[in-house]
Image: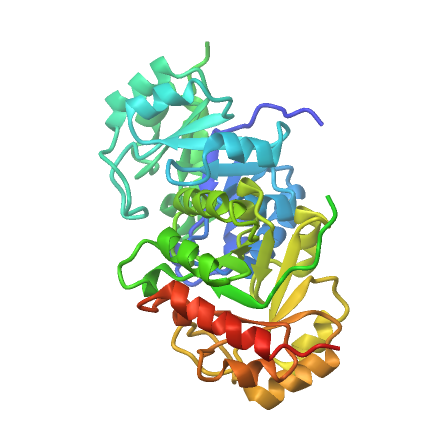
Length: 215
Length: 215
């Protein structure tokens, strides 16, 4: 099976701690119905059995919408549920090992936190890079200096990979983020913590498509 | 490559929190020189990159002594470093998925915390079971009622698998543990926190071999 290009337009990253007590699968389904094009399951303090269970539930759900499931960090979980791929950070599995374990048919996304890391990523056959964070955010604690709009624009200029920006992106700033030339935006709380996740996804999706740079 | 039977006699499980500030690799090497026959790397709060790095160091070290390296829980890490196998608990990756991902040439050990779990394990092609815990211990918090010597004896009677007992085993009680008929004992603090890990391993190893049940 040949990989097709990933649609990074509106990329949802999960966080069960931010659902305001609601079921994650319900939120993800609403988000997908609102226009989310890719879902990353991120679990940082979860036993492997529960992680696999949750990944399987999301996989089944997302297969019905033809939306790819990406697993954060855990290549074992991605392999276990035959996810579309993984997203790795700079402290996760080294890219070359991840690629060897997953093969060429799976997507691998890599977070870059500096321009230098974006340069280094040009030597790797990653499927996309995450520009992380573009703005400061409460969702991730272990982050470096935000890129801001200017930094994101620089990354877009120097990288040979598709790009998705993450961190503090909400309806009020998503147009400006898209105007940097990124291929998409990743959000956590803007959807997961929204009163109406489907409506928020729809709003984000609409602004994203209006502001997408075309070559 | 055909799997040979794992020598479970003296099975070291690591815990970097219990080394009293000493380097883990140094302790593991001393332990192996003292008679440890199998090493399990257990890391519960470690980023994947660091886990892989540490596993690679131990793998290189242990290959030199022809001692197998088992990775706790993380099949991705085991695959990344070509470890001899994994040890999984009841809340980790389901056995069938673990076997599919690792193939038949790798060892899979499974912790059982009740007699019922030991019965269920008879239906699985695990390479050994861990009787966990045999005594109460401070090393693991998430454990059930200890088996005690009588419980371990019952597991040995009903299981079709090789067995290793874990939990609160030290030189003063290891003879009685071996007399239950288990194939070996697993220790953490008895070696990792020992003033002289090599000497403690030697002492344990000697008692284990004197008290090994032969058919």
